[in-house]
Image (tube, rainbow over all chains, first blue to last red):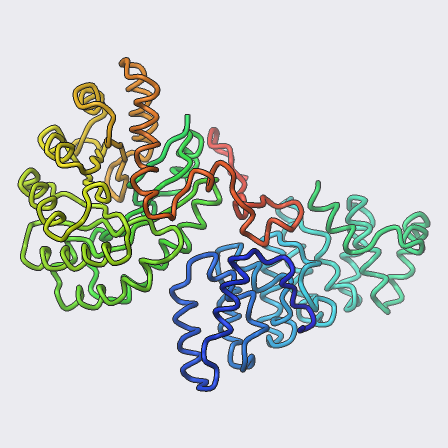
Length: 223
Length: 301
């Protein structure tokens, strides 16, 4: 079974659709892609969910990148989830630009980021900057932003991005401070460590593993 | 009280309408395939339109807790472009068997031309083949003759009247439609179609059997709350709650439920079909709930 692919949660209908999709004749690549394309372009909501979730199973995955990107552009949240969450295809095959758009959109749509397979593996500097900019936009509008976002920023902390951490440690909620602490923990940037040490209770609780990205995400969704 | 609007063109309606419908108790709607206000010229626009009925519009409705079903078909007006009509007929089987497609429709006559007649008949055969109900749009001009003719042609093609919903009825057409065993739908639409006071009289005269009410709210000045408003008026004017339940909910469910694609449990006990059911926090069975802004006052957050 492909790592990251999780059909355990499938309903019977989705399993049946996946099964049928896997029986599209695969030997003639062009024909296979045409059939797949027709299915995608005429698909009903739950059919689209099944097809996008099945992306990791199809042959010629390099040829399906545009299709995956199209799925990410959808306005139907359930379809977006099928591509972005619990699906190894994006992490394994999407170029950085498309990956970054997916993560940013997941933040925008308030999807649970911890369900994005390969989130840590695919973190990159460009994405860190985009996420930081998005947070600034939200703060300027006096709107909230998910603390999960800092997970992809942490590994790339630098002189500029550390100011976001400072901001949160000063004014953020307890949950946001936990996220900031986790971000610092994933970073080699010394200034981050210093900031964390300046808040003993936070430093202690992170050293005792009292929280992680999963608990932060859970608490955020329950608020 | 729960309501079904079995004929409403939501592609032309805003989220304000969805909010109002949901608040008024509309739990399920049927959106017919129709024309878009000006004639289409390419088959591709039909394909994408059908796609949006089973995709985006269905999802959009779900954000407001409303179950969205649709009918698939080539409408009478656009059947007059024969070259285009031929291509659209080829597309229908791709969509007619999708989940949530409850009938072939809305088909029938507009001007009662030969082309309209040709494609009406072809689609009746398709409905028979797929064992789907048929939703009939009766003409707004020369309605009485067009309605009779629609029913004649259905019988000629061997359709069971109980599988056919004749829509846009009025005082002149209802008797024959009921006598011949068809379902009789009434469109409560200001100025040009039925009014709800008249509807009250129709139900008082003809009863509630095989009668249903819809809004056909579309891109014109129309009211997506026509069904709940008509129900309220009926109650006020002394029609029994049971008759209201039948005409504003149950009969639509019974008629279109014959497709096997529409069941009361869809909205009373929604099954967890979505993977999102497994994610904590977000509205589970209905997709993302948009933040509903307060409408009073000038503040938009």
